[in-house]
Image 1 (cartoon, rainbow, N blue to C red):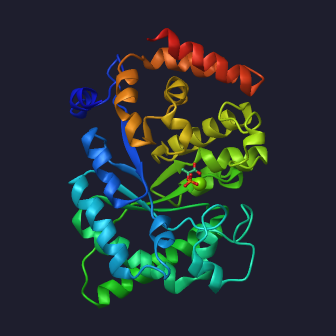
Image 2 (cartoon, rainbow, N blue to C red):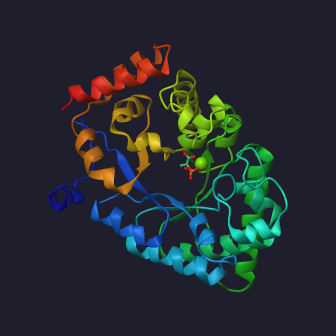
Length: 327
Ligand code: PEP
Ligand code: MG
C-alpha cells in the first residue's frame, strides 16, 4: 500500500473532464489524522468527538477537548477540520452519562446527540469553548449532529453565540466567522433542507442514520441488511432533494456516511451533484483513482438510470456493474 500512498498523496482528485472533487477523511481519535495526511486528504470532513467521552470514567475537561482538537487542526495545516459536537446515545453511551441520566439513552429514537447536548448545557459549553479556542489555529468548522427541527438548530447556535461572548469577555481568541454546519441524517431535516439551508453554512449528509430512520431499520442489526440499503430509492430521493435545496441557497453539501466510502456509489453521488465526500481514510487513494476515470456527464446518466429503478437490490447491482466497467 505504501506505493499507492506515495502515488496518490499529492494527487488532487479530478474527474476526467476536470471537475475537482474534494475527498476528506472521517476520524474518531486525533491519532488518526495521520491516516488522512498520508493519503493527501482535502481535510477532515467528520471528526467524531464522542470517543473523547467514551475513553475515561469522567467527562472530558475543556483542556482535554482542546488538546485533542489542536492536534488535529495543527496536523491538517490549514485544511478544513469539521468538528462534530458529541453524538452520544443510541450505540454510544458513556459510563458518566449512565450515572447522570436515568432515561432511554440507548434508544436510537431517544435522548441522544444534540438533544442530549441541549439538555446538558454546561457540558455542551465546555466542548464548544474548546472547539472555538482551537479555531484560532486553522480552518475549524463546527457541526451539530442529529438536528431534527429548526428550533434545535437555533438553540444550538444560541449556545455557541453565548460561548463566543464569554470568550470575548475573557480576551480569548477564536475564529469569529467559524462556519456552522449540521448533519442531515433525520428525514425531517432532509425534507426541510430549504429552511435549514437559510440558517447554516454547510450540510453534511449522514447516510448511516438517514437510511436507518428513513427505512425504520436498525443500522446495527445484521438481520435487516437487505432492508438497510443506501441504494433504496427513498434514500436516493432524499439525497437529491437535499442537494438541490442546498444548491438553491449556495450551501455546500458533503456526504460523510459509509455510503461515500463505497466506490460503487461514487458515480451516483457525482451524478446527483455531490462534489465533496468524507470517507474512511484508507479508501482515499482508491476513490481518487476512480474519480479520475469518471466523467460528470456519464455520472449524471448513471444517477438518472439508478433513480428510475424500483428496488434497492437493482440499484446496488446496477451501480456495481457500472463501476466494474470503468476498471
Ligand atoms: C452518519 O450517521 O451517517 C454519520 C456519519 O454519523 P455516525 O455514523 O457517527 O452516526
Ligand atoms: Mg449519524
